[in-house]
Length: 386
Ligand SMILES: Cc1cc2nc3c(=O)[nH]c(=O)nc-3n(C[C@H](O)[C@H](O)[C@H](O)COP(=O)(O)OP(=O)(O)OC[C@H]3O[C@@H](n4cnc5c(N)ncnc54)[C@H](O)[C@@H]3O)c2cc1C
Image 1: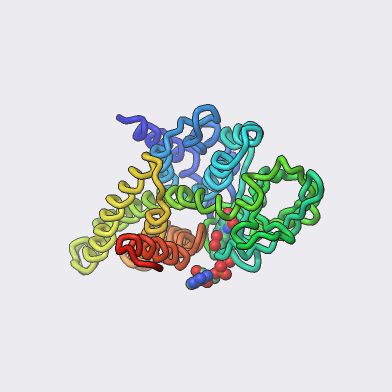
Image 2 (image 1 turned 60 degrees about the vertical axis):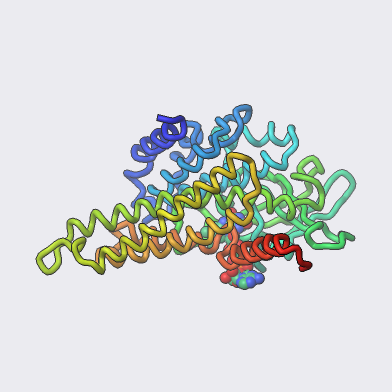
């Protein structure tokens, strides 16, 4: 067994013992499984892609496999884990100073601290450059004002990556006004709201953040002043690929559920699995899933070679989220009335999966990225001017 497979096996066993038995009730009650979350990190799974010096094993591909296991069990849990380790942690890894890494990564890695990453605002999430939250320079400090919404883990977070725009900047382009800060719970002027009620991902707390004259030393600036929106593009590629790791697990699980149910369910005197219209649904999802497996393997290879994956990550996110929603829809159809009942987990997966077309950049935004990258590529190939 390779070390990647071993990690996956350990994660599977952990989740089967610690999360699976209570996952339906947790979702029913909308409860964040904080204890399991912390032990998942303590066991070394939550942030395993961190380099060894920061508490991980540096194995990104092993981490993606582990993500698939989380996806099988509970998408809400997986989202909260990744918001802490990938959205918060990976941004500190990529853009943080040594001091910042020393201060923030150990707690994230062992689960004693919970992180979040805050870009989206009540006025919009797709247009990062349109960020309204501001930071204003005051000597060696910055003063932050504004509000964020839909932020995963905000209600339980200790650490925040906060995206703002430099007030009164003279930069030519809005892209050069972004400033990210590392904030901590309890800072004067920083407050969070109650968990928001939502369609799915019930085990992952989502919430608002408010900043009223939050005064932070310049050492809390993450990356260079004015670089945050540009840095964000780099981190989002890995984030999109990582979240898609979860999707692979859930689609596999949906095919499992369809086949198992259809083999057992008798209608008109025989198992529905024998009906071709049922087989057609399995074939549709399975065919696209097999193609996705090949494509995600290509992306994984690029990740392991440290190559740029902007277009590929957007393609994976777009197609995998579409497939996930379609697979959940088809699974409900195969299960008929039982599929519509909360007792069967396909309706939960359907509600959870819908977020993949919205969070981390909507499907429309992925299409824009793919178009932009493709046009650039073909213009270069043809040697014509844009
Ligand atoms: C459960 C949950 C968890 C989340 N977690 C986080 C988090 O941890 N951190 C965080 O920062 N955000 C988070 N988000 C926010 C999420 O990333 C945003 O909802 C998403 O980016 C879309 O932003 P919006 O909701 O403001 O939609 P808008 O930007 O207002 O877009 C509305 C619609 O217009 C479309 N649209 C926008 N621009 C264009 C265009 N140029 N062309 C075509 N169509 C366009 C969009 O695709 C969408 O369909 C979370 C959201 C949810 C629901």
